[in-house]
Length: 281
Image 1: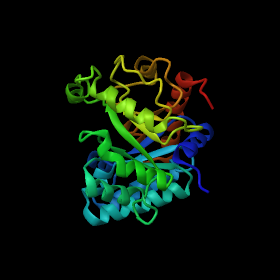
Image 2: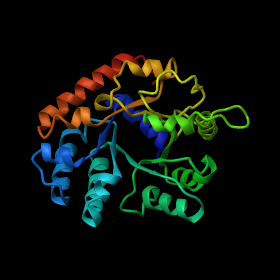
Image 3: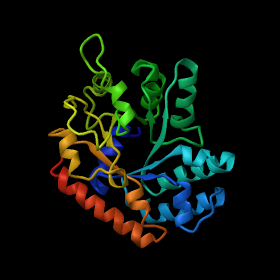
């Protein structure tokens, strides 16, 4: 029997440290690396990142949009990158932020969480705008195939607050409703639930209760987006046990040197360890 995503993540964070690195091949980044802005440049970019970090970082997070913009050849590069990252021992969190209803969300689940799919990742990001319950096919697929789903709750972009912090009829914010429903999915899971949240590292002290999540909390917005590791205590208070800090450009800007990419990763990992230790392992 294979281990759940939560169990695999628990092990990976313990062995490799509390860090997720985004693979976001912006056109400007490809240019800065001396690569062409096409599928060939994309493939070389991924080759370097995987060589540098695939066997070192707990979670790698390819942003699907930057592959999709190159059409079918770009998606083929993404398929290859997912396979190579998993072979190197990293957990792959595919950043797709999908959300829909009925057969459509079931199709997304099959595309990204079913072992029969060439795009199968360990976990995906999802948008709950149509209601957390609309994502049930994703949750079911994740459970069936030992995958994970990270649901947007409190994002770093300034536009998000108008929706996420709106108060519903029961007095809870939209974000707190998402948090509570994901917490219910993880209830009783050991050592860690497989359903996570996305809470930006730059959102500040929001007053939301994250104490019962019992699952991972991805914290993007660090580094080039303005956040730093010390902000994690402001955002999460004492609920730091399973926060997974996520960096992208802060590290990728140091490429294409494999040595420099590894050095940058070591620097931010040390900063994260200093804030997040001791953790419940």
